[in-house]
Amino acid sequence: MTQLDFKKGHGTGNDFVLLTDPENSNPLTAKQIAWLCNRHTGIGADGLIRAVRTKHHPDTAEIAAEYPEAEWFMDYYNADGSIAEMCGNGVRVYVHYLITEGLITPQDRRETLAIATRAGVKDVLVGAAGYSVDLGRWKLAGGRSVVAQGIDGSAETVEIDLGNPHSVAKLDNPQQLETLNLNETPKLTPEPATGSNIEFVVAEDPLINDGVGQIRMRVHERGVGETLSCGTGAVAAALAYRHIGGAEMPHNWRVTVPGGTLGVRMFPTEEGEHVSLSGPATIVYSGTVEVPAV
Image (cartoon, rainbow, N blue to C red; front, top):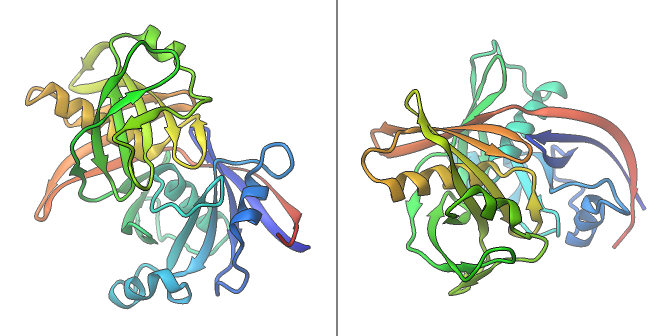
């Protein structure tokens, strides 16, 4: 058995087990991660994040050399123990964890911090009421069809790449969103080789209020199942809805998920359009757990 100190945190209900291992001296197996994230026999979470110094993790040697300011790597895993490239809620909660643990000390509440992830370096703005992360550039990646329990027939998806894959389906009305059964994994055709996060989205009434787009979303996360929130999923949903709506759609969005509300902003940069995600981050409790040697 291995004894670990941990914290539990969440961003709009998307929850994580957080551990500190600066030198990457105590890596966990996929089975151990799945055990920790199990809501019946472990701590329970949508994912697990390890705080590792970027220079000490084999996945981030190139990032450490090129971006020395990105001192900390977000070593993120899905609830089933599989590796994930990026998590928009997770990176905000991770920065909040680094601050509360004293691992980083921002000079003020408007400082931008560089965080290494498997999807590259992400800049996180420390704000007075939450955190905003620049997710960088995104890609439109074609389309698929999706079948899910609770909706008739199939729906067409917009494929969005944010460093991790998303399949966004626009539904016709709020009732369809309510009747969805996401306990079963929706089926995508053609099936992605590495899976996809699948978002279902409807417009609020009105769709645009004071220049801000308003949508509601539910999500089935790859390697997890339905979650109360998905940060990159909210961003993908807003991007897809703007793409579907055309040139008259706004560049600022409010995305309501079962766990709360997230903000999405699209903005130009010299290298192309970037997109950012803003929202709260909370540490709920801390503890010590004995992890089986599996």
